[in-house]
Image (cartoon, rainbow over all chains, first blue to last red; front, side):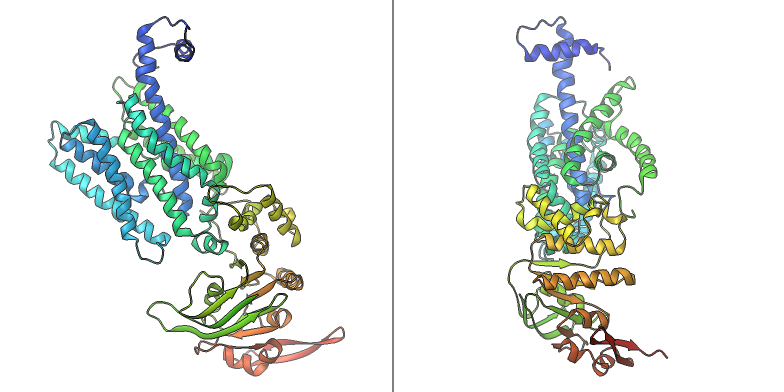
Length: 314
Length: 246
């Protein structure tokens, strides 16, 4: 698959060769393509896809709303602004990642301040706060693109915002693995409490859960994942919305299984879409474009078929 | 044991919903909360459950409280047993999931009220009466000695009303303390030893059920003409409340 063909048998050979010393591998170029270009890209796709999907599933439960995606808490807009700003100022790749990550978490802090002192941050305030934060940073992103040089930095910013894994390297994998796995592990650990939270604040509180505290735990974990994902891959849309629904149709709504399955399914989905993105045409199609172009119609078809099964009246 | 002492509550920048509510529900007893719509029945229950903090007075509960809200939709179609096991959340750590004893407790709670056969059904697909029973089972699974039930018979057909009422009476006989809000004076008469009447005037009236639930008090409370009739039920005389229609 892709611009440089490597037969599947050789890929297996090369991977085994790395794990078992002394195993003979024939072609050095093939080995480089597989180990240095494609393997980090696949790892990154798993991290980004899995992270966005598990975050989407957890946030849909937290806000008891099937239309919620990771973008709702404003973190991806904040991270977009951080990355776009670094590109505008021509600060290089490290600054892009750092900027995206810091502004992503900054958006979460603003959300926290917006909902502070409102009787323990009820769900509706958090949703509104997220929408406000997201819109604010989207406006700043628009300002940055407006200010950017139309011949050099503007294309770079626009392409990065569309979402891509084409620059994948082991450095990027190392950058992404910390925050994404930390957030995902926390979400998996909280998986049963998320069920209780999804009953609504009143029920959760009556059962003995502090809903605002639990919600913030989910939000912070989600923000880590989203900021990490945007930092290395730009804005990959639809994964966090569609995959949780697919996973729910498959294994049901119980978050004990839904959250881990969402991660695996999201990872597999983005690996698949990214493979299409880099091999369908001579030049790469941005990943974010494909996830939306494929995700939206598939999602609609599945929802029509299964609309009464998973959601209560939705 | 549930004790409310001089409890008063108002929402921010609003008048008192009620003041000076004092009541005591010992184990094995039922207290009914009655009053017209919008006079604070649910608010009082939510204060007792710790969901709202009253501005004055104290709420004292010995042990955890099981709150049974009015059956409402859930966002996700969990199985009935999954709903019930969530009653165990106090016994389960933050990063933990229900263990085998939690599932046993959930199943026992369902068995106790005769709905074990519903365990694998999806909650939204159950009837209103079945949903209400699942929520009662959830409160029982939490091992609370005090149950608070917000209009448990509202929206149910006659069969299910009787089913819920006899279940509640059985739970009280087993030693639980119950605080129940209801619109039906007959239900209060059947279940409760004492009642609290919230008439919106500010100060709540409480007392023994058979003294307060008579024609004059209820006519005043609801502003309509209400008559109490007595009828023989086996060897005892029972009271029923009927309304006259214009």
